[in-house]
Amino acid sequence: MSSVHRRLILVAAATIVIDLAVKAAAVRWLTEAIDFGVITVRATENPGMAFGVGADQPFVLVAAITGTVVAVVAVAAWHGHLGGPIGAGLVVGGGTANLANRLVGGSVVDLFDLGWWPVFNLADAALTVGIILILFGSLRHESAVPVESVHQTDDA
Image 1 (tube, rainbow, N blue to C red):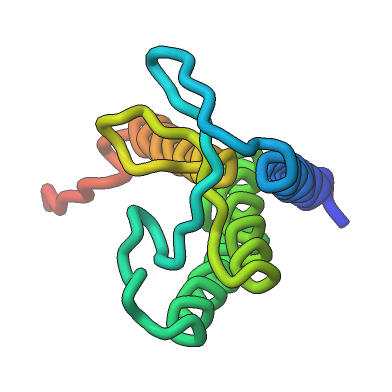
Image 2 (cartoon, helix red, strand yellow):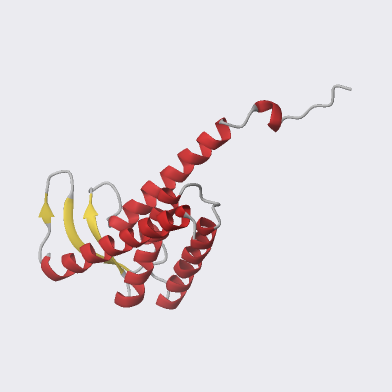
């Protein structure tokens, strides 16, 4: 196994463990919302996917769609199609953690409420940061390609 694959697995596994531990602790001990001014921490259940989309759909459908997306992303990450192992690991780990939470509890536990954004959890934050890293990495990669190699012309 390459060092890139090891880092991908390490980041994904750490993301899964931390997210699921925080969700379990919140469900067990967070009995009422805690308001920190800019953010309120409270345990809520999200039966849907991102931003609650599909909340009114059957559990089996939501779980199947989520599982398929996580599997496709994991395979793409393993084959290096998502850029570096850190961003890819955060995306795989965040998706896997939310899927595991859904399969065990029937829904995803969301915790952080900014008031102006849908309530989210650490797995969602990992997904977001991972996607940003992947996008920045792809932009950096594209800007490193010489223009001459992108646009070939025939002068003859």
